[in-house]
Image 1 (tube, each protein chain N blue to C red):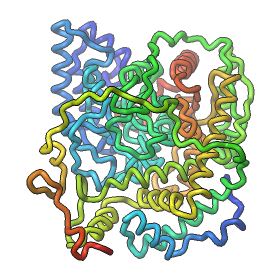
Image 2: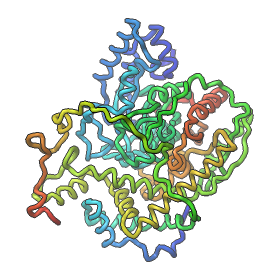
Image 3: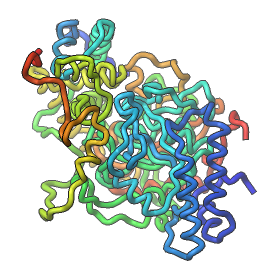
Length: 488
Length: 110
């Protein structure tokens, strides 16, 4: 048998329910794996080993007693450090929150705890989820398990790397402009950003409230279906969370995409893309066609405005959301002065890192008198145009496919210019602006580094993109490959 | 990729004064070095964003959120709130269940 940490959730869940393995064994295997490789990968800001073993014992009791269990009971899961965990340090990758212990659980955590998951730890991220490499973490960068000199992507880089390296069977991240799909792509795991409003944001530390969504990382579509099922659905604590019924995602995985209409956005092939990435994605599209999908090109004409619109809107919202970090209620507080305004300004000067400050500045500028119409209002109108592009495309197509990123994982320290880093999100952020769902799935390799295939679905069409992902896994083996650089 | 039309934004370069004014609006302290760096970085970013002005938005209404819901209501049912001790547990300083801060009025204006 494979090592326990190599199993999928679906496989391990079956063994747990048949009492062939215990959750404690499964959890120990993952904690051992963390001890063996995380000093190199550095995916975790906190390993909750004691809690994990308690939760595993409790899960085993549930199995033994014959209590009601879920398909995630006893499964080791990692949680991005942007999701509030009651009484457990939630840093958001920031010095500002380095000792913050939330007074309550995020709705997502309540649901996962009720499902009986085992939380192995909190994962590293770019500070306040702002970044595409984890290099903006206030603590340390995470390394890509496929090449330790490279970035795992971001901002949910820790969550992606933890699953890629066998330190968790699945994990959760958040995606505001690509922060689940881009690291999924760079680490060869499936990363899914649900439709805006599919998952509650209550207890998700806010970055840009009109764009943020929590979603899962998994080794295959079947696991992703379970991980999404556990968290999706309405919540009275988040009025933007939709009460629309949640379909049974697992039963939608038919393995067939015959007759499915797939659109390939012409604007998602840009100058400067790596030719190997282009080739891998073109090959993937041929595979989808051979599987019986009807593939044709589609135009999303306002794509070229996406980066600019997003990097006005997201920082504008962030500048308002992050106003709460004033050193008064919680978090780091500069107190070496009698002057309240100075205390506030110094708290924010020392508490925030450079990327967060840059975005607060950009957002404040775009919202300031005299620039509001030229930047913020204009960006919101362009957002409407981008949404209309997708509305029109989904009249003719069930799914759109594209590369997730223009290039494979870059080296840590390679991109120092902030604007160049923003361009990492060029193919992912339009989905956030339009509020539709999207996933990145393993789509090939370039010189041993993973290439991600992005699947975009209409609002609440997570079932469709999961069906495509599952069917694609049936005829490819990219998702089964392991990074060999890490000793077993 | 996506280089904006530069001639439009020459007069919009973010100088040190602008950086300081925006930082003041955001109540964000910046080091001298950051004032310089942010000035040039924000200028480059905003130059590239000049492309936004090329979009034809006539007759287009702005989108402020992607939620497909409007006016979500719930019944007004009283529920217990969290105890003050729990909510104050992360406070940097407190006294008698109040948050404690440096003086706001006396010498507090800047």
